[in-house]
Amino acid sequence: MVFHTEVPLRTVNRTHWLDVTSQVEFVLKKSNALNGICLVSSQHTTAGLTINENADPDVQRDFFWKLNSVFPQDVSFAHREGNSDSHIKASLVGFSVQVPVVNGELKLGTWQSVYFCEFDGPRNRIITVSFVGD
Image: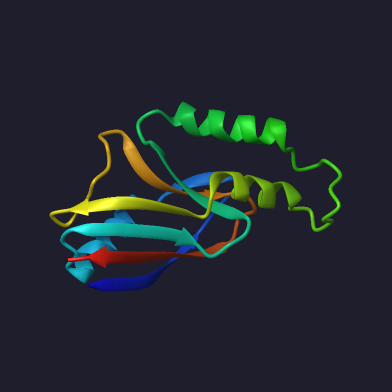
């Protein structure tokens, strides 16, 4: 079975993590996915996806603090639209994550969640959730 669907998102800050785990799980349940691979991808060049810790909010703060210290928004870039740092950050993080699906459940660790990483918000965004398997 192969299944694809788009999930709309609304981000509220220029930079932040949005936990999309529940949206992905909802799509899997709706598709009757049992065992296989789930691919979650961003359709944007200034946002990415990652899997990371869901228990300690300092992880998110450290993530953005470090990225912003290495790639600040106000540095002079050749690309002059004001979001050059966002393109670099999104490329470093990556635009997709893959998660095994076992018995209809995302096979994530205890402290793991799937996060949409916004680097140029607030915006309306779309992620694609794809499933390949049984």
